[in-house]
Length: 75
Image (cartoon, rainbow, N blue to C red):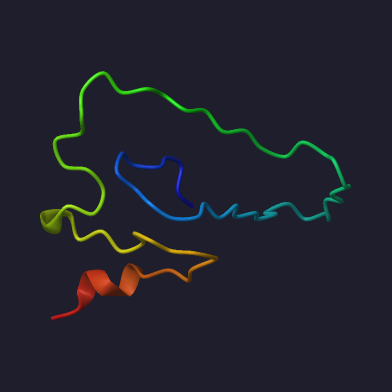
């Protein structure tokens, strides 16, 4: 799962949950299950997300998007 949002990224963030325990975990309405922090950059990014040379795959997504990892192997 993604741990950071790159400078220049544009889209909707998707919260990904996974339980790797042997027991179920119950989530309740209003339960705090995550956090997000924003950092203000002092200079613009040299290569923001979406720059042509980066091969960015998720720019502009507007909902849950399946992995596009396979695009790393296209010839």
